[in-house]
Image (cartoon, rainbow, N blue to C red; front, side):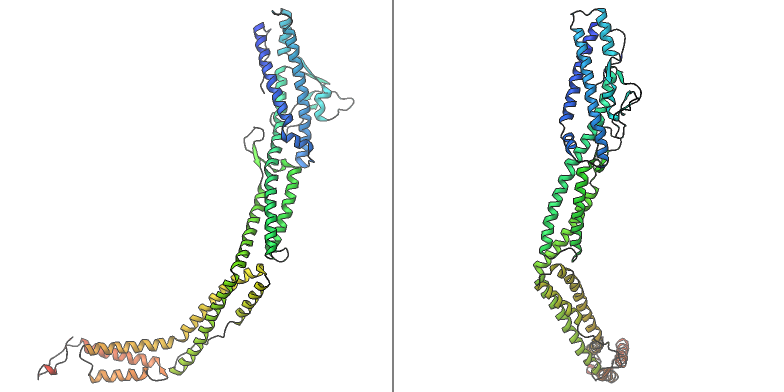
Length: 461
């Protein structure tokens, strides 16, 4: 919508013709904009909606603005028609015609009745006369035109166009904003609600119900929130609009989807929980078999540890052997409960129990293995000492010292301690060390060949 030029001196015929052509094009553009606003889907929805809150307040103002806008346009059209009639009286307009046309085209020649122009402020008091005042251009909270002084007001065509521009901008902003919210949010809420219903049916099939599972409670809360959100969006769309900063264009901004996005994320979390329960239903038997196997291995390992403890106590002396605990009866009871849940298709209860049992069973098997290692540690130490003793004996033999009486004595003493029961590991270890030291001394001592032939010589290193 354009703006006419400023008033000036008496116009000549060419200036009048150019002004009329410009005003005619402007009139057509304004009419096209007004008809588009009149037919806008958002305006039709606003007219038929049961509005509340800020939308109700702003639409009441916008309706009055649109009414006044058409009144201004009718006055503008009448003035343009009058100017065209004056210009068409004669081919060459007289001085009087040009003065009249100049006043009509540039002066404050368009009068709007106060009863029409003041309709935005409601019916005036009986003793009050009115002057029309309009909102600031494009302002969201601009006040409606109101009666302030006279029963009617005169405008120039340029001023009238400015007023129409202001009213059109605020009315269009209201309509476009409401339509943008209605076009975006309700459809998305409906899609999410449909997905919610599918999730509810699936949740019910696996036993996820309100009061029995947290995900079931979440589904109930999401349902209530979405129902309330849709009602609010339909009745008060402007409450869900975030205006773009530094934007004066009609509808500049975006729908506020904060609540919708939060509930969509919550529903996605519930879907993941349901998927986990479904996974449990599919592989529950396999997981139960594995749990039985793990707990069985833990039991067998603990039984082996108890047997080994008796052997250690009989064969090893002067050492502390840790006590071996009994089988994990609590885990066996929980395993039986898990099997019961599976038989009764209580998947929502089976899912967390299986996860807990799997971790506990792995821990129990690890504990059993550590217990066996701790119990058999003395036997491992004895085996290590025996191996060390035999290794040094072999080394001594390679150097021709196997028949040395001193080494034979030390070896026999250590061997008796290691192969007797019960074995004192501390004493046996000292005996092995004494044998190692004696062997090391002989192996590092210089060799002196004896007289009498090579057969009497000790082998050299």
